[in-house]
Image 1 (tube, rainbow, N blue to C red):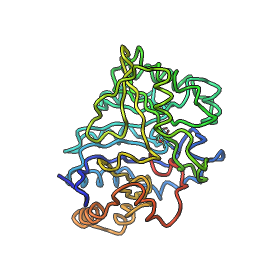
Image 2 (image 1 turned 180 degrees about the vertical axis):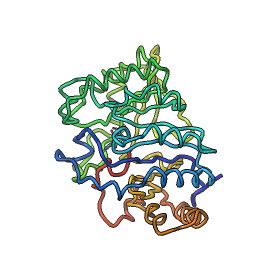
Image 3 (image 1 turned 90 degrees about the vertical axis):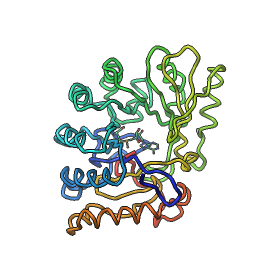
Image 4 (image 1 turned 135 degrees about the horizontal axis):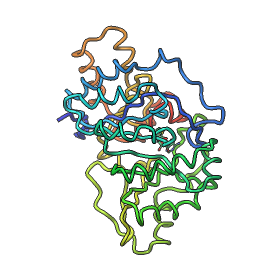
Length: 327
Ligand code: SAM
C-alpha cells in the first residue's frame, strides 16, 4: 500500500484534463475568465496515460477526471476508454458541470464509469445564470435526471454562498426525497482567480448543518466512509442523502487519501499546496518511469499534515482559480 509520511494511504488521483471551462462560475473565476494556457502547456493524453500507469503501479486505484470542464477537451471519451483499461485502476469517475455531459451518457456507461459528480448550485434558472454567467440551467437539470435514470451514482455538488444561493439549500436537499442522489453542500474556498470573497466564511459547515436541522429536525447522521470528505446525513424516508464538505474548514485532512494533478502536470499532494513537482516538465525532460516513481515517492513522503500546513508552506496566497487545479 502506498502511504504518505503521516501513514495515510494514497489511493485516489484527481486528474484535471483541461483548464478550460464553458461556464464562468462566480466562485471559481472572474467574469472574463482566466487566461487559458496554450494546449502545448497541458499534459497530452499520452503523458497522462503514462503517468496514471506509473501511479497505478505505485498503488493508486481510483481516478476522478475533472478540470476545467472535462468535456471541453477534444476526444475525451477515447482517453477515458484507454484510462479504464489501465491495470489497477478499478474506479473511474468524473466531475462535470453537466452542460455537454448528456451527449456522452451511453459512452460513459459502456466505459464503466459508475459515479458522476455534477456541479449544480441552484435549482433556479435565474440564479444559475447569475452564478455561472451562462444560460445553461435547463441542460444541466435535464442531465441530472438522465444520469439518475441511467443508474449512475450521482453526487450533486453545490457551493454555498451568502447572497447567491442560500434559498436553494432546502430545495436542493429536497432532491433527495424521491431520487437516489447525494447532495453535497461545499464550503466556498478562495480558489477563484481573485482571492477571498469574504473576510469570514459566513456559511461554514456548522451553519449549513444548522440550516438543514432547522428544516429537517429529524436529520439522521449516517456512518461516513473511511476516506469521505463529506459528513453525511439522511432525511428520514428520503431516498438519497445530504452531505457537507468542510472544504475551507479542512476537518477531514487526517484521512485524506487523494492527490491531484493539474492540467499542466503540477502534482498537488494537498488542494491547498501550490504544487510540489511538475510531471510534464519531468517527462518532457526525458525522465524514466523509475525516476518518475522515485520523484513521486519523495513528494508523497513529504506531504503536509493538513491543509493549513500546506497553505502556510505556499509561496503565494490562495487565489488561483479552481479551473486551473481541478476541484
Ligand atoms: N467543470 C467541472 C465541474 O463544474 O464540476 C469540474 C471542475 S470544477 C473546478 C470542480 C468542482 O470545484 C465543482 O464542483 C465546483 O463547484 C468546485 N469549486 C470551484 N471553485 C470552488 C470554490 N472557490 N470553492 C468551493 N468549490 C469550488
